[in-house]
Length: 326
Image 1: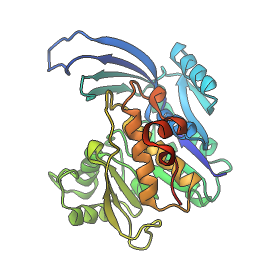
Image 2 (image 1 turned 120 degrees about the vertical axis):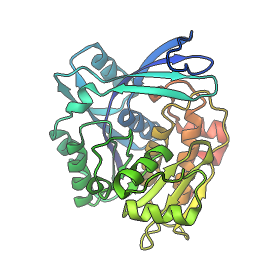
Image 3 (image 1 turned 30 degrees about the vertical axis):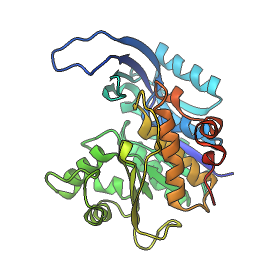
Image 4 (image 1 turned 60 degrees about the horizontal axis):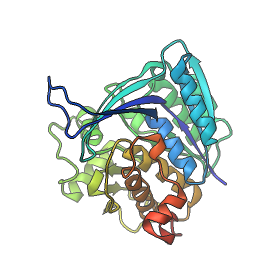
């Protein structure tokens, strides 16, 4: 079976829930919880829980939060390569309101010191059919090296360009076979790399000009996640990935969200799982599967612990909904 390898970030999430998000200078009373997260780790857990062979490569500090990461991964039976650094394990502050909206600040800590050898650890033994996943929540040099190595090996390179990172280059984006920004990250990349001032939000943009921007931004497939408005997909004309159209929209799954934190990670991890486990399926079917996994994650609090299993997808959406139809 093909594998999913995620090179990325571990972050210990510190989450406060309150009725509404605080205004600047305002204090609010809420509830507190803490748990494992980080874009890369969330994506690895998402893929792993969906039954594919998954592994994670990331950096930790030599501290209690690092031990928490190791313990969770061990309990999850997720294979990990942990690289120790002299920086603290990354941590986040997340505030979630009653509608599932959130405000997030992340201290990158050890992720900012992810060593270059992480790239070779992630790309080791990759081959055709495998999927290498990465993000922008770490030092970027290992990300670039790993994506290049994956493509040389014939594996598929999936880049989730999150969070917004001012050091992102056009050369890095061009390494992605599949790019999965959300609407805010897409608008940043269009302005930052294409020089388009005040780009239209993809949620309301007309499809044809939006497709044109995608084709300028990235030579590979672009899947823009739009929250409750679904996903916009743009393919290069020469590689439709089993689809019949170069661009289209996929609706979001109908869910009852309580915490949208990590939904984008659930989507990228589930999409990687679908690409690895059902390569014959159309990309539209793979995206629809990922939308269900992302939607289900919003019905549970937290990030990594909220990622869906096949059994949970089947229970929530019906017997066929946990499969990518081929």
